[in-house]
Length: 333
Ligand code: NAP
Ligand code: ZN
Image (tube, helix red, strand yellow):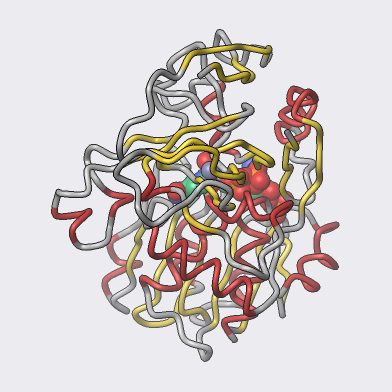
């Protein structure tokens, strides 16, 4: 099967039309006709070879939504015509301890949708059936793509850390991930504080779910929040003043990192006295994705998206590079 995609041939290169042959469908795989695919910051980090792992030609795209057009001989739970989404992971071994305990996203043999294979900025994408998660009624297909990477990445920490409606949670960085975190947390029932370098995002952040908005240019603002939060969820790709955010946590509070900053540093004294912790996580499992989709449908939550034709992919990446999307770009096939 020939796939028509967009590929870069070098780091930071222009994305150009690119065709490749997929070969025979394996018994546990499905082929999906891509309808929409979100543009995640990780696509850009991979395009730029920021993580030193990109293989060129490189087809990004790992927030794909589409219709199943073929199922492998061993696939029983999905059928042709069904609408599904695909996120960061395209396959996992299904037999290691991580897969067997429901942490498939941590499988040593998990293959990223855009790592050493081609992703969703294409007319078709092929994944292991486990990782093609059905989209329930009540979730709008057009804006669903970003849920499959950005959405699950900020939803999973709420499940992992048993966040309660009584929790006060801060979200650092109101971009693709951060804006979805605000909406999830509001529906979860928490007190929500947005931390942003962009004061102009305040009104929208409040509409999305923030009860409080903190402009991080104001250095004193974090001091005022000392000891007030149960969790700070960091979605930013650069290093922060970690000590200030740790200071904003209550006893046993958690600084949870999902943004890919180069490193995190902390004084042990900032953690020890009040038993605070720093944690981090990658995306989420198929089960967590399913739960998140049900939650989004029940609370009528959808990412705020801007839509471009797939052919305008370079314009979309340029906008993301400049920090301009409000808040997630979705390419339409
Ligand atoms: P994005 O849409 O570009 O948003 C990032 C936000 O970070 C920006 O909107 C901005 O928010 C803030 N920011 C940008 N530069 C900053 C700076 N110099 N200092 C402080 N804040 C800054 O990106 P995204 O798609 O949400 O992705 C965010 C990060 O998560 C990336 O590193 C991405 O690779 C990573 N990621 C990780 C996972 C995972 O599995 N852990 C999954 C998906 C993505 P304000 O304007 O509000 O300050
Ligand atoms: Zn992503």
